[in-house]
Amino acid sequence: MKNTTIALITTGVVASLGLGYLIYFDSKRRSNPEFRKQLRRERKQAAKASKEAEKDEKESRLKLIERVIVECSKEELPISAEAKEKYFMEQVAAGEALCGQGPSYYDEAVLPFYKALKVYPAPMELVMIYQKTIPEPVFTTITTILAIEQKAMEGQQAETPEAAAASATGVDIE
Image (cartoon, rainbow, N blue to C red; front, side, top):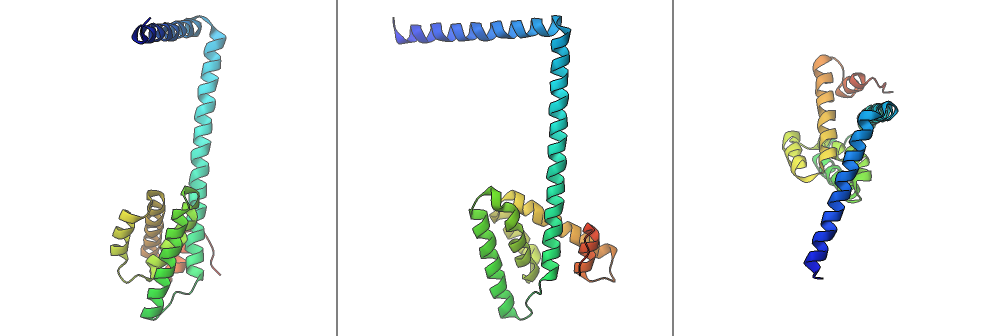
């Protein structure tokens, strides 16, 4: 026999088996009430597991944001232009090194990039550069931190920016 004939026969057999399984599954689903209950239970469990995973992800993201804001506010930022430039270059290099190690280090890379943003003279320009150069999860986290900090500063003009950001996330700074 030719190879094309063998391939056609094999394809026909596989398609017939697949169609037979679909018909069997459908008839079992329609006729067996216990099977339907089991399917419903499995769907509910999958939905519940999905919600829990989403909740855990949100909680870990909030903890990361709190940690970044607190650590950045505790550290004294340089004052002179030369020191700011050196600090900026060190932080960007550290962030790029962490991003280069893969997605498992993205959360750790947020802090150096955020510290670099805090000392950069034109933060909005740097945000635009970050948008083009750093991985999307890191950029999203940094913009979320900026939004939280901005909201806290608008709500509490009398406090320092660090204290306002900390109060927005519910973390005490000592």
